[in-house]
Length: 282
Image (spheres, rainbow, N blue to C red):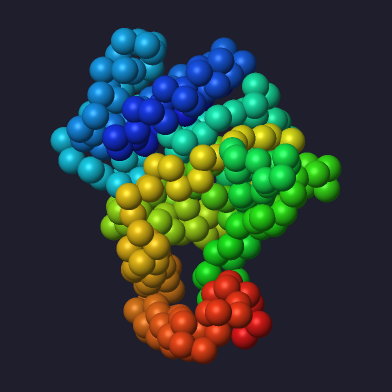
């Protein structure tokens, strides 16, 4: 069993310095690591070459975004049984991977597995849930399950979910060959939702494993993007996903639905409800 962990990096030297040790020290003798560098202008590559010469480095001559950078590694290294898609802003518990692999090997018809993602910064002395898998509603809007909840034992179970947050996803080569990896038309955002939906379309189940724990320095890798830009990219890629999966007219209908509700929320309800709360009441 050969496993490749793929990390996408763009000007993330400080994040790599902070988080790479926990990945390198993961107990899994068949784990290899690949960093895809999206044409960084900092010293990310020099750091990796000096401090972690065992890591494979793929250098892109332009910023490919998230999904396309992962696809670059998938095409370069096709001979692994399992692939892990990862952010560069994660630190990991030692047994995070063994717990994910156990679910992959014990459950039936598994398409992808993801861990419990906690915010790296504690709140009132307690770790807080960032994502425990995704809920995807009938309009293909995706939400991190239990986001903002204090971590406790009730979130440590294993269960089927609608999707997995792209910060950490374990997927087999067999499944990736069927769904053709990430959508190459998406630069950043929603690509994890789209991949999850296409994995389910192909007939596979997606699981959340609460025994696998990672810590996320949330938004650290995209700190320079404002919320408006993130929302625009997310909406565009949601349209692309729906169009590719269900056709042009469904994509237009869902985009109009979202824009109408966003404008209504922004105008009348944003001071009382979050957008998620407003849409969930619809």
